Amino acid sequence: MPKKITQIGIEARKTAAIEAATVVFLRYGYARTTMAELAAAAELSRPTLYELFPGKDDLFAAVIEQLSQQAIRQYRDMLPRLKTLRTRLHHFCGDWATHGLKLIDRHPDAKDLFDFRFPAVRQMYEDFIYFLVKVITSEDHSAKIPVEKVVRNLVFSLRGLEEAAKNVKHMETLVELQVDVFLATLIPTG
View 1: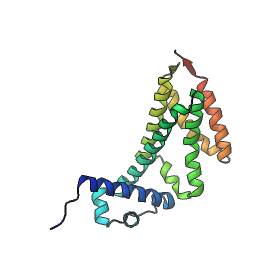
View 2: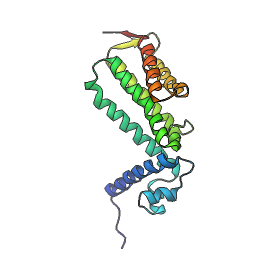
View 3: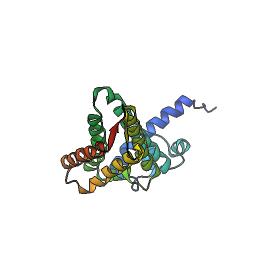
View 4: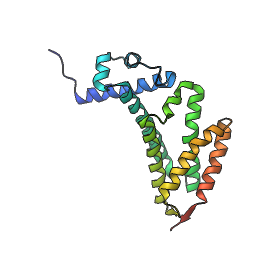
């Protein structure tokens, strides 16, 4: 008689599949990766992987969501150590903007993890925007333009700076300047 897999067992398998898929997607990108390779990396049969994730898109989205949540958790944990809004935004935006460049430098096919054709990637940006809005508004700052709009502009301008940056160090300099320009739009409310 087959043993029923518990919900805990299913979650453990999903977690293992996401961790294995992260490594595979980093190395080969989305297009060059098959469900068979993902199943092998997770040490699961293909049918089992399909039970956990109906398709490659679903598993890719789970990888992106996990990466996004990990980054935001790290940023939240750092909040008490970063004392000023300027320091916080420099750190968060600098890390956000250069993390992808560093990954792509090591794994050129990792660029798929930042491709806006994928809804999960767009959601990752929305999550970061929401996080920054909360950081700024919790510090009693507002702007002449709604904070969410200026934060959205800041985050997407960081994405555009990647094209202009010569290397990671140059990107850090560009991000710092962009954050300072953004900060000049804020008005303390407290």
